[in-house]
Image 1: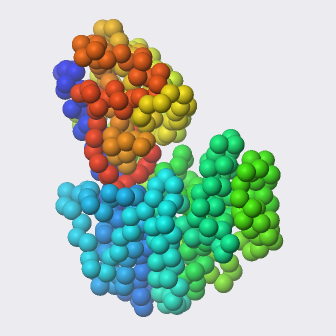
Image 2: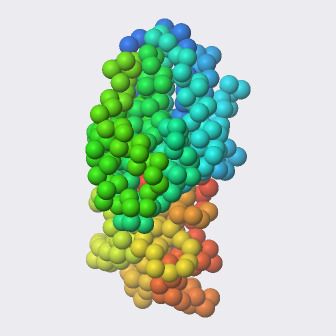
Image 3: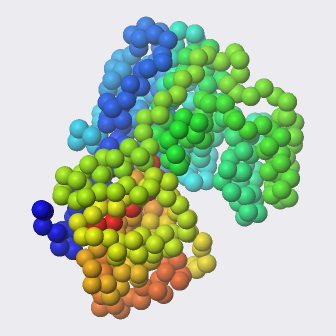
Length: 440
């Protein structure tokens, strides 16, 4: 039987397990592990022209990996990514940094709110695909963040109006699903708009899921669904405005009202459209579980669809850990949320870990909890997440830090950046939600 690791050893094991999960959803690993060409009407060599247009946190690495496989078959490639992503490319599963070809264009843009560069990215991609013919192929790597990084709106709706509309819906209580009904309705690139612009070319969408569940029925959500038809009607978008949109700009109201009865996109004149799910948080958890077993742990993947208030989830995970037999690795994947009542800075993973540290205080059992975003970004901070152990509370109080006070003002970042459990990875160029790792 393997020896139980020390606290520091348990932290190192958590990092190895997390790294294995993130590595499994890197571009190289995903393309090598999936028959992504399945469903195409012809072999890659038979297309006249191949254009790659990616949007989302994984798009830069994905376009680079595709360029290595396509070689001179790739006519041009585009990627819309958050600010800072172009400065660092995460090495692929092979450990090598992808080579960026000269015909590959990267646009850094706003996230989570679109900005003028988001409009520039969308227009550049629409221009790149508008001249494609029936013997051409458009490949679209779509991942989380794409709906903000790449936006185009109908005449009469400005970027400012769209941003105001989304903000007003949010503060009025609309959830993300309701907001997306309006977002896709007024998007010229989401909800199948990019595929419509590329018609009559064949279109292949390569999806990396950042939404719960990995069924193909969810793929229209990923990256704003640039090539897949909007499953919601204009009437449903209008119902959202009627319920939450008292302060939404008139231009958005007018367009949604007038769009009722228009054909859904992609239209019947679009080329063949295929979609392949490359990976999801389940992919990452399976790889993480394999690494944990290699390290000598018994493993349970508790859930791939974890959700709830971050601090409550963290407390519940610790309760489970404290009654678990030694030598186990418990894994969760999904996304929590934070109800912000204070004026601090943080993210859902850091808050979950802070609540866990409070719950662990005084525990005599050797446990650890790591919570981190697979994209390397937790909230509006430069942290990926944090790792908590029973020693966290002891060390915090030695440094004069009151855990409960930081949690009360939602200042998890302010706490963890002063502590050894602070986790920074930088952008990982992938995104399949968050992972929690409990070791006993």
